[in-house]
Length: 315
Image 1 (tube, rainbow, N blue to C red):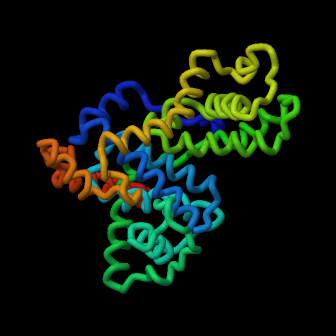
Image 2 (image 1 turned 90 degrees about the vertical axis):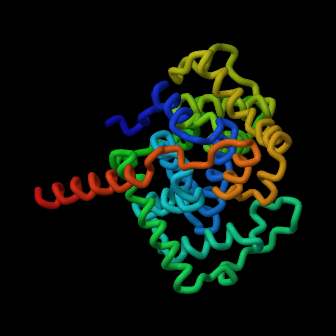
Image 3 (image 1 turned 30 degrees about the horizontal axis):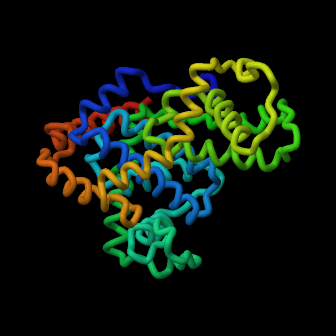
């Protein structure tokens, strides 16, 4: 396995994503963006490295390529993906920590998604859950986690472009621009790309993402770039670079448009499955999980998973 590259989504997978879900494409994109934002906020409160949170973002995106978002509450999928990556990393967190953090983010006390309000330091003790609430969260978390693993064929490898981008920056000379400011802007673009409903991390390799982020950062700060097709040195062609540059820069405009087209959907920043169902009812659409006989299919998936695990233990 090439540790510098990621398995990319195929055209058929992207098409199937649009077909198997009962969600219209605009609502799918809204769910994706809001849940990725929730994952980032949870990673901050849990004091996890950004690399851990970014890997969780990528795994969540891969999971929703093969299963409908409507199968589970969106926050449960976010928590399960982050929990899965965190426990394999250097700073694992307990289920109780996850329970308190997600309870806080989903509560009216949370100010992470309300930028017009003052943002006091969050006191997670105020979101401490009673035993029955905690056990319910734990059961949901531990039910979704193996589904993610099974859907991804237990392949949790994620190569991120952040370190690669810093290496690329060291090979470029920016006239009149501190390299530190360029680096911060590059990382900001890479983190923003994680939230894009275009799923840029699933359709492009890390070296291309790193190159596009450098191009955007240099343009924003007025840095003088080499007067040649420097991106070709990093094995990126002009067409791919142009697509990624536009994709990374278009997220803010897309969010503003969604707020206008679907008023109220982002009122508090947290998009729940119930709110999406209400929006679908307003449109006269069938509300379902997008999987037909989902309960039977879920049971079959779990039976297959149990059989695989039993076989692995016996061998």
